[in-house]
Image (tube, rainbow, N blue to C red):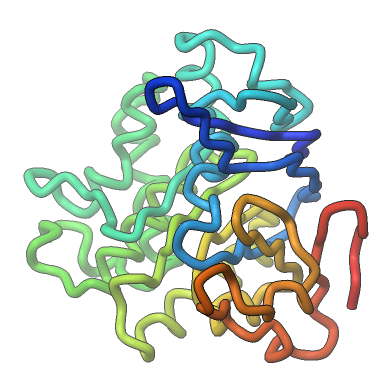
Length: 256
């Protein structure tokens, strides 16, 4: 469903070239739910933007649903994202002047789906995420956890090939974080939807079946991820991953 081949990326600052990603390679199968784990500055946000087709890599190829999106122009990419990619944001990104149901329906408006069909589908998803009774309310009338449920429902409504969740629990307390992760895991299982969860939280990554670790723009082995970084800082301890969690690392496939 998602495959990266030798993806590297650099930014130019005047005459200086800063390489932020180095030969990233991994695959995500249909229906998998994985974590992309890294501390601030690891390159995970850049990698997310590349995978979502919001930026083009300096080198390499990115395949979603067997399509090399690196080759697409902006117009074709926009159409592709509309159909194949769903987003869940840390700050929810709901439109305050639309009701909960209207926010969930919105992606189908751009696909010219009839009002009755999109209303029906939106309500089904809101029921699945446990907030069907909030459909007529506005985002400002909801708690953070409820708003994130709306965002999750919206991401699913086009039945995308893959959903990218960017720090989906970053604005939530611990109890609500657990609820949101449980909802996403239940949807992953019931709908066989592919999720890539971008996070810096080991507690979130530990609940995923597979974890991809980034450090300073490189895919790393779990033991490397625990070594002190430049300047003496230390990344989260990967040894806290539970037994059975698979970690993908460059050139190493899967290690348990």
